[in-house]
Image (cartoon, rainbow, N blue to C red; front, side, top):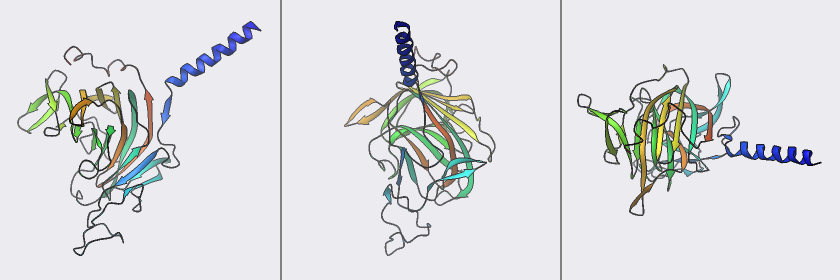
Length: 288
């Protein structure tokens, strides 16, 4: 009897231990359960019966969970389910839950369509993490957050969205007039005024192929990984709340609709307590 009790208790302990670090599937392949939507004011080129003013311009946003334009849908592509983001309106697909200390994985593939005001620009989207506050706070679309850029030839770049800061080691390319991530570079504060840091290298696949994007966050640090290669690390993530900079280490995840057709699939997230070897901050941990 005692041996049987030990076996049962051991089994309960193992189940409990495994559940602490389980992987969550953020896209179930059937619908958008676990997510909600927010859409900004449509561009005047969008054809619909949505209200316009006398000049022909839309004057209000569809807003929360009012995706009458079918910007976010579930489709089958390449023999598997995916989330299609049309890009026709600027907007966000947002997790209902908040997350911290995690490894997020998404697969991304560009579609063909592009829309005003970005019809002649690079295809663009983005994965915004540590998202807090109200939808539409920045640019009348996004929440306060940190962004892992998803844009043609720029996947993995870093952007401060709204009033926040982060520290990134980088070098300044005077010919291109931009900051490039470099683990051996000088530590720079990135703020809403200097919000953009470019990745170290381009690891993207050609259009028409799926790219795997991973984001690791641990405390106030984050790492962007594209197709298995680290291309940016950021430190000291903060956000301005009630007039004070506070740690920005937790929040919802936003996926952007930003003028381009794009597909996302195999979206999953796993809690972590440390960064894997080769992903971590060993080179800068004594400087931050």
